[in-house]
Length: 179
Image 1 (cartoon, helix red, strand yellow):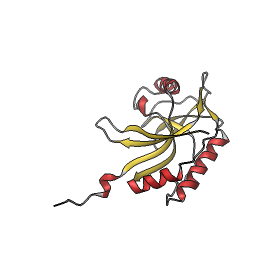
Image 2 (cartoon, rainbow, N blue to C red):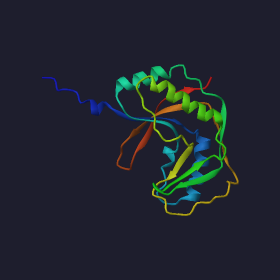
Image 3 (tube, rainbow, N blue to C red):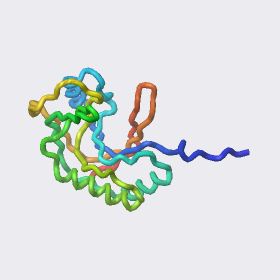
Image 4 (cartoon, rainbow, N blue to C red):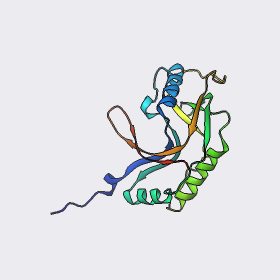
């Protein structure tokens, strides 16, 4: 007798993100360590979310991948030069005082392509940031960073959020290179 498949078990929690290279990751992790000694995001999980896809079935994933198959990433550099803080969720983040317009354009293009697959984007406006710490209770410097992180962007990554005893672990499933 064959057991019925549980579609919930086949779902993956996914998002599209800018995934830092090792050099950028080291720099971001160093800034995180300087700003927050507790409740830090694991260095291996540092990223910049472009689109949160949420619980995704294999059929949805296939549709998303087809919609993004010929995606071209515009050449840009993201300069991470300031800390920020959201008091309600108590999130310490790293961001840019001048987000490149190409990044906003890329997020809009991702939304346009994914809407064709039935995806409903978040209503709140995109704000480029890397979460450094959650439930943060320290103080946040409002001064620009002396040594900003210069991050050349050439690809986006599809990331799976995998539960583990230590908290979520992120795994890159695939990337779309720039062209």
